[in-house]
Length: 243
Image (cartoon, rainbow, N blue to C red; front, side, top):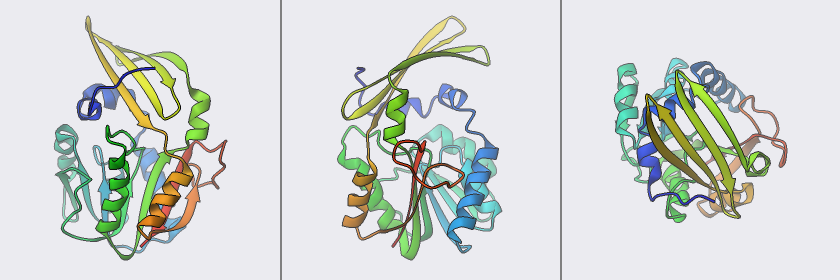
């Protein structure tokens, strides 16, 4: 079992190696997912807050579908990259998602497992509290997290990937409460090490927290195609809720 440094995500998510390793999460995947969400939930064109937006791939497609979008992310590099796509109705801000916005939104999202990594476990629930604060009455929130029951089947393991000449050695371990990934990067004779640490948050955990802040779950999906959720076979846990 690994020992993650405190606030490891501030370094890893700002690293170019993070984006290289996860480049398979591409624009096409994002566009199909957002299109599916808008159609399935029948979201009305309005304002969207994309919390932990990364480089803005989901924000861009909400905007293409006619929404007014604000993307926020803690990573300075991510926001600097995303700002090249800004236009009327699409804006990006470097901001801590735990701090509620001054405005309220029709839709608030937290996608691609963008919580669960805080050193203080209670901060995970502050994400949901912030989503509640950021939503208009009648607005929809969407959380896209991994399904821990499925993910546990993939741990422990080790794999090697070579991407654009960069070698990644990825060792996955787990314990009762967390998933760990140790990521060794070899690039031009230099070696870097990163680690991901993700809290195991169950469907019941989410349900209890959402109920406490009076957010009503309306849909539960198991993948980005929005198939029905299955507790052991679904890769994702996608929760849609309403204020």
